[in-house]
Length: 278
Ligand code: SF4
Image 1: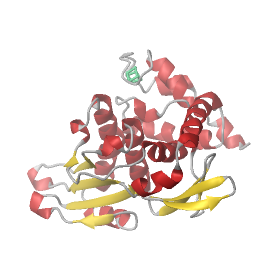
Image 2: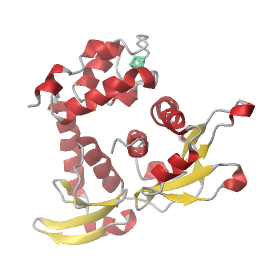
Image 3: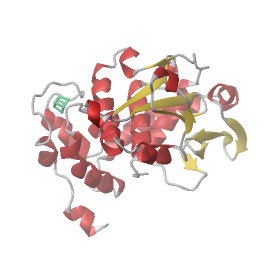
Image 4: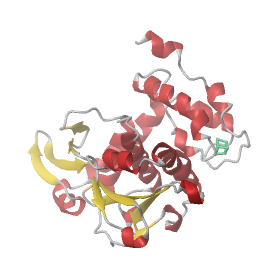
């Protein structure tokens, strides 16, 4: 195991100090300390607390990602329980029926039928027991959970009506997390740099024209074949005192395709890709 990762591992108290310590419970934990403990052991995502200051927490977040990837301090229980549940559900799926509705191809594999599924700009192989990235990159445990959740939900045709997170039911805490961990960091990173933003977006998503709606730049990311996420960008206008603004939009039927938690994770994946982390 990498000694440097061990030396710099994030302790629960270190993360706890970054929380507002109000024990509001919005993250699903009763206390901020319980939340911090779950995060550093890989059982909760840091984005579950919408009140963390992104600037303050960023160095911890980077170290945390490194230590969790190296398996340092990870309680496997959380992942394993989720994966065990999802593995049970995936076994009940008939991939031949589901393939069309989720936009995948069926392939005969060793243990039955498998799915070939586009995922961002890559392609993954989904079997009844695991997921492999056919494009060569590694998939994190959370990405595997995202992909299994999408397959199990079974897909649906999009409505083509685009809405913000605030229009989705039960999304109050997720609106804050989306702002704090995705929209605001992207606005800070690319405010005044629209060309750099479009350069970061275009290998990963396609540009769409919404200039008639006053949007400076807009793009669509195909997370999965039946799940696109839009990103709108209004650049800052310093002379007039307007700050840069970024907003994610979703198809109004998105919750038939993915649960809210997974949807937030998909937005984090887009943010990480645009911030050069992936
Ligand atoms: S949401 Fe944040 S502030 Fe509220 S209990 Fe969880 S960690 Fe604490």
